[in-house]
Length: 90
Image (cartoon, rainbow, N blue to C red; front, side):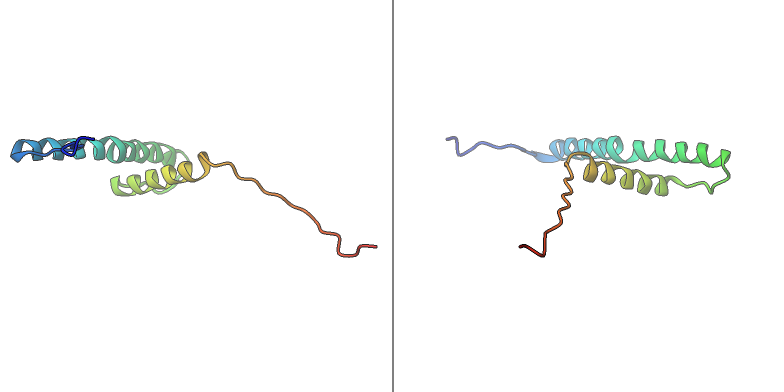
């Protein structure tokens, strides 16, 4: 096995800038843009049924609630078993 195997290798200022660019892109792609879309969808629906509008930060929070709800309830199978035990056996 190679002892010098490196998964992430950040060398110097250029590597640091590349790493920060990748992190900023991931944040924009998975947090900011869906929050922006969620904000606009909410405000579009809110105007028609007279609900209060939300700002960008609240759109990000709404997106986080939606994403965590999908994550929690989407991938797992929930099994509920109900049994009654016979207390009196003859």
